[in-house]
Length: 627
Picture 1: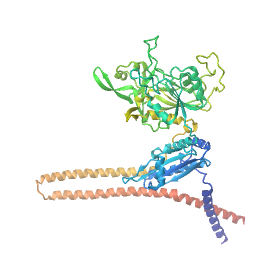
Picture 2: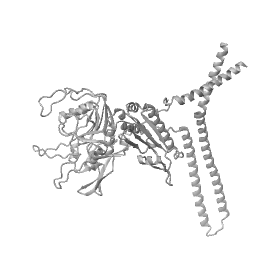
Picture 3: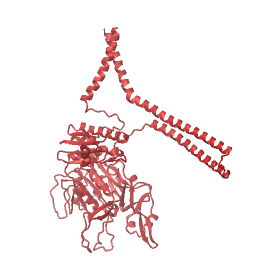
Picture 4: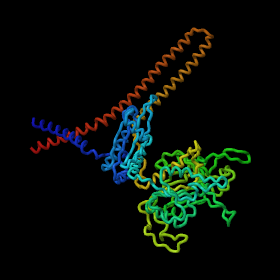
C-alpha cells in the first residue's frame, strides 16, 4: 500500500513540477528563445543584433496586422504571424529600446485612419470593398516616421533586411551625404549654343537628390570631406594622382564607394585635340591603380555583346529602314541579375550601352560578387569596331559567343592595401607637402565597393522617357537603371552590418508526402476525366450519325435507344469512379494530416508526460531501496 501511495505521489509531483516549470518559464523567461527551424528563420542575424546594440534612443514600431480579416486567407495570416514573431525578436534583442504595438485596425476606426495616414497600403479582400492591412510604421523621439507600406508575403526572405534598415534609419536620422565625382555632365551641361538653354540634369541625379544630400566634388581633390559617407564616381577619366589618393584613403578608412567606369562612354563627347585633329578622342575611363589593389580589373578595349539580350533598334541603311539587333546595347533581365543581393533581387531589367566587363584578379583577399552579368551567348567586341560601326548587322556577322557569363557590375569586399605605399603624392602645383597624419597602408576592416563597367546606363535614354505634363517634367521609366543606383547607394548605407544582411531561408515547408499523394491522385483523376470526355464525344458523334440516318423520323430506333442506354450506364459508372478517386484522395490527405497533427500536438506532450512518470517511478524505487 505504501509503495502504491509513493508511486502515486511521485507521478503527481512530476506532473505538478512539469506544469509549474512551464508556467514559471512562460511568465519569467519571455526574453529567452530557442529557434529549432531548419534555416534559423526566427533568429536575428549578427548584423541586425549589432545594429540593435547601438541604439541609444527609444524607437516605437506600430505593426498594422488585420488578423481577423486574414482568418480565411492562410498565406497572409501565417505570414503576418511570422512577422509578428520576428518583431518580438527585435524587441527582445533591443534591451528595452524598441517598443512594439500590434494593431488590428477595425473598419472605420481611429486605428484604421492612423494606418492610412501613416502610408500603410490598403489590401482589397473582395468585391464588396473590404480592405486589410499588413504594414509597419517606425518612429523615434524626433518625430521621424518611416513606413513599410506592405510586408509582401512573396518577399519573406527580405523581411529582416527591411525591418533592420528601418530601425537603422530611425536610429541614425541624419540625411546621408553623397559625394559625386564625375567627368560627365550629370548635373546639366553648358548652355546650348543655339537656344541658350542650360543642359538638363540627368534624371538619375534628380532622383538621388530626393533621397540623399548630393554634393558635387570638382577639380583636384586632395581630401574627401568627413561628412561624406559614400562616394559616387562616374567616368573617372584622367583623374590626378592626389584625387586618386584621396579616394584610396577614403575607402581604406571605411568609406563606401560606387564606381562607374566605361570602355566607351557614349555620352562623353570631347572635341578633337588641337595637336591631333585626326586622333580618336578618348571616351574610356578606368580606375586601374585602385582596382588592382581592390582585386579586380576592367577588360581593356573590349565591349560585351550578348545575342540573347541585344536591343532591337531601327537602322536606316541603303535598303531602307529595318529593325536589327544591336549587340552593344543590352537589356539584361531578371535571370541576369543577382537574386541573392538586395541591390538587384527585386529588379526586372537593366539596360546598358557599350558596357565593359569586370574580372576578378587572382590571388587577392577580396571577394568578387557579380551583380549584373550577361548570358551564355555573350562575348567580346573590339571597342574600335563599335566606335566606327556603320552597319549593326556587321557586328553580328563578326561576333563569336564564348559560352560564359561576363560581369558588368560587381560588389567588392574584404581587406586591401593602399595603392600609394609611399604616402600622399604631390599636387600639380606643389613642390613639397607635409605628410598626411591620417595616412593608412591597409583598410580598417574590409572595404565595401560596387563597381559598374558602364556609365551609359545612368543616362536618360537608356531607362526613362521624360514627358512635360502641365509645365512639369514627369519621368516615365521603362527600365530599373535608377532603381539600381538608388538601391546600391542606399545599401552601401555607411553600415557594414546592414550591407552584410542576406536573404533568409524559405518559410514555406511543404508536406512533400501529402503533395506526392495529391499529385498522383490528381493525375489519375485527369486521366479518367479525359477518358470520359473522349467517350462522350464519340457517343455524341454516333448519335448524330444515327439521327441523320433516321431521315427526320422523330422516334428513336431500338439501336439508338440501346446506344444511349449504354452511354448512360458508362457515364454513371465513370462518375462513380471519379467520386471514388476524389474520396480516396481526400481520405488519404486527411489521414496523413491527422497523423501529423497528432505527432506535432499530441505525441510530444505524451512523451514528456511519460518521461515525468518514469522519473517518478525511478525516484520511488530509489526511496524504497534507501528505506
